Amino acid sequence: MDSQLPLSVMGGESPQTPQRGESAAYFYIGDPGPQTPVVLHRFRARDRHGKVVHISPTAVFVEACLSLAVAAGQKLITIDTKHPECHGFGELPGAFVESRLAPAPLLSALLKAQRLACEVPCIESQAAWAARVEATLAPLVSLVLWAFGPCYRRHTRAAVLRGSCFAAWPVSLVFCLRRRWRARHGIDSVRGAIKSLEPELGRFLEDWEDRSRRLSASDTPSLDELVFRAHALPLLDVPEELCPLAPEMQQWLRGCTEAIGARLEIARSQETSSAPLRWASAEEVVEISEESSTRIPKLLLDRASEARGVASAGPPVMEVTEMKQVWQNVSGGFKTAWTTFWRAETCEAEDGIASQPLSASQVRGNWIFAACVLSTTLGFVAVSLRSSQPAERSG
Figure (cartoon, rainbow, N blue to C red):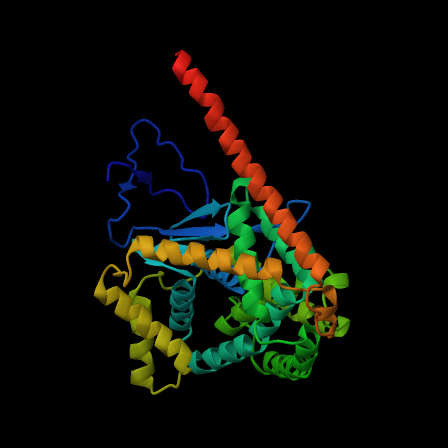
């Protein structure tokens, strides 16, 4: 490849022009090696004032881990995009690690393996707590941000559209509809489902405070603390009037998260020792677990083994052709949009009342609206084609 990028790009900073007499180091995209930086592609939702809104726990966790890696000497290039997903990565964030494609689930697994490699004596405890944090908070984040109607319409979807450019709005809307359908699938009452999770959340927060009192806090947040912060920030960014959680639960989460965030800022400003983010880190976690006979949760161990298998197998091979995959994505997006447009989804459904089917007048109105849009479009095309024919004849 003829294009070259400077190696001095770290943490999103602009490359510096080398002075006369100084040598500049360059790398070609696709060249492996220890000096190849991690290239992170991310999407950032924003509020009406332009402030970043956290809607993805994976994005919060990835950015926190990579900021610690940059403090330890890891080279990082950050690319901000204006659409929440793309064909290569799927849902953002995604990265190139040692010139290999790492979508969000695989990137998260690699970063977890890196953090565990830094804390070998506490690897079992941290992995177990991280698994419990995800099992407790991940369903709650999905329900509040994507399934609960008032929060979805006035906070989550609005933030995604503000972070997207105008040309990417169709992609962003389909992304939001698909995430909302996935979060609401099989749930009759969203508010009831959230209320049923609050007792487990209370017990978890009590155990978390007890764990924080028993364990001495280090300068750098541990893996389980980073996972806790990643799942708590999206909930704390929801305005109080739109959040269905009890106010005392929000205050509890805020207190724990602010303490972890303060230590994370201190760790970012200091030079810390950390293992470089590379594909071999997943293999090291598997070897450490076998030698020390520690019991890592099966989910994390499987993801680390998957990362090791992808690294040894070389570039990934798609099971289907690229055009077929594109067609599946497009057809799935249209199907989701069609289902959502014609299905009743009233605000009462989020309040625990079953939604009512569309009335005959509403269905007839939707069909009339679709017919008007289609006829107007076809008429414009016909007039354009007819008006272009005399011009061609006269020319």
